[in-house]
Amino acid sequence: MTRRVVLATHNEHKVHELQQILGEVGVADDLEIVSMAAFPEVGEIPETSVTFVGNARLKAEHVARRTALPALADDSGLAVEVLGGSPGIFSARWSGLHAGEDLSRADRDRRNLQLLLDQLADIPDEHRQAAFRCAAVLAVPGGATVEVEGEVPGVIVREPLGDNGFGYDPIFVPDGGTRTMAQYTDVEKNAISHRGRAFRAMAPLLRAHLA
Image 1 (cartoon, rainbow, N blue to C red):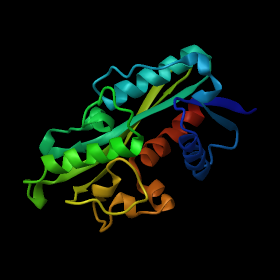
Image 2 (spheres, rainbow, N blue to C red):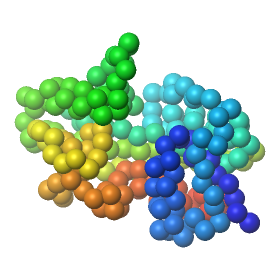
Image 3 (cartoon, helix red, strand yellow):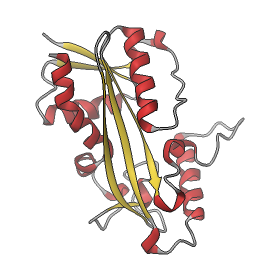
Image 4 (cartoon, rainbow, N blue to C red):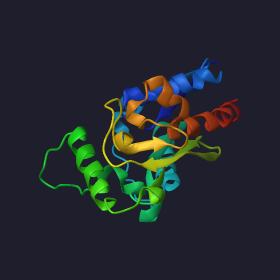
């Protein structure tokens, strides 16, 4: 029997990415992953927690309650050691909300990235460690809520390189690598990404809780 699972996003690319990840580990065959586009009545979900796990849990449990279906959610961002773990949960709006401005995602990304580079301008290379982090949560109506995390450690370089990415990808080089995440192909990035690692860790839990 095919089980329907709601991914707490309106981004169909994320749905496709999750289907690929679950397919790689043999979990996708009996699952139908759908986005929140199929459930407009769910509405917006305020992300009021101060942690990635907390925000992912809020989204997963809200969607599970409103749809009566198992729900998956994730929250992720960049944590820079010298900034005490910031931008963290504020990664997508590090440069502010810009009230009254109709900014595209690309424009917001550029502002966030440039602000971070400016803040780190005087930081020596040996102290520019950072990590992309992701928390993924599964909420099953009438059942358990389970959570996992994925992380990719690396360093922040001094200027953007590459154009196959978004957010802070152009200034982040994973440990052991020589290229920024924006210089990776989609296949290469999915193989090591924090989101990929989190959902690969979630796969056996998903199978167990939906059995």
